[in-house]
Length: 564
Image (cartoon, rainbow, N blue to C red):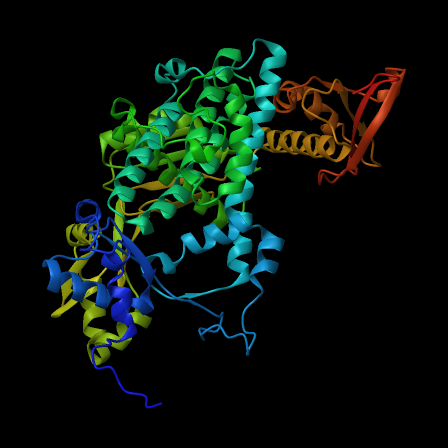
């Protein structure tokens, strides 16, 4: 027969654009049901739909109702091959998704994508190493914090009572790091709620990952000894309660992004919750996001911790410049800042600075008159922008007064020879005048200078060696496969050298208590054979680098016939 064109047929995209009405057979059936759900709360599609579905949706809804078809449009970008080209089955220019999920886990793939430009409607060049980095940089530290909580909770229950979550004990904690991480946790709960309700999904995962870094790199790292009971069982209980609460909250928040690892953690964490608790359910995916408590949100503590961390980073830079590792103790650190509030905050957290930088003392100076400022230009960047004016701008930068440089440090911009110069093109270097001691190293940022004393002495050398002995004992315990609660003895003896001076034996006797505290077990001095009836589980012999040829022998043993 004859085929005839039907003029009334629209482009197929208009059928898609009519979806809100056609799916409910509007206006021919149940118009009241349609009125309740139009416009939709959100629609979601890829960036390539901007001129397709999104366009026809908007055209039809505007013509029919003079309103948009949805309250929110969620747009994702395109996932491209690693070389930036479109993924192609013919070219096979992308890895098999099933192989990626099998090798690294579906959770790692999900987090990689949810924390990528795709969520901001930008293209992503998919790379397998990005998925691998999620496992290494996010999942392993997160899981190690969870495992540490489980291990230390078992140790706590062996020594005293059964562990049970108690929010009241956390809120009355006087430890600033406890109060800080709880405050950050509730700020995070508030942020996630607000951002999700506003459909700003691209801001959520980056903030969750920042919090995980704060939890693992700061809170757990700086409070590990408290959780192990070094400061008493009461402090151990409070710190474990804090870590438990924070881990439970972050597990619930991350469940939509990483559904499998969070389910595994939650099933164990929820065992400690009493029946009827708001966060206890058959699955983490049945748990609502916890409500935030504005009473525990303390912005002043957050500022204090940021200031503490800034000092720690400056001190680490000083060590890096001198190529002196953190295992080597130093005599003193001087913190210079003109703000009394800054000094007050840092002083409150001084014990953590001493621990992180391995310094014996910290002093403070608010008189910064002997700190000289100078301009440092980014010639590579400015050379392209200024051309022949580069020489004039450099001369003008060299002639800036101390006040002008200080103002530039605060504002981040200045006008030189008619050119607008920003902090990307120029930075401010700081140095302490009249500092002639070669053993002193200085470094600073826009607010603070630190001076670190690298003067060597015998006591510091002994402390460094004692720390190395403690670290080697812990690594030996791990190689042997011991658990923290295993009942073993640890011995240390000195193997004499041809030019032995007895320095190592003196160090072991002098620093025995320090080493015992570090390994949380008595260090016995001498050859294990003198104890009798012992089964050797592992040994390590090492030279600590002294010139007399002496060596240290470490031995882990237990009574013969005794099970772990």
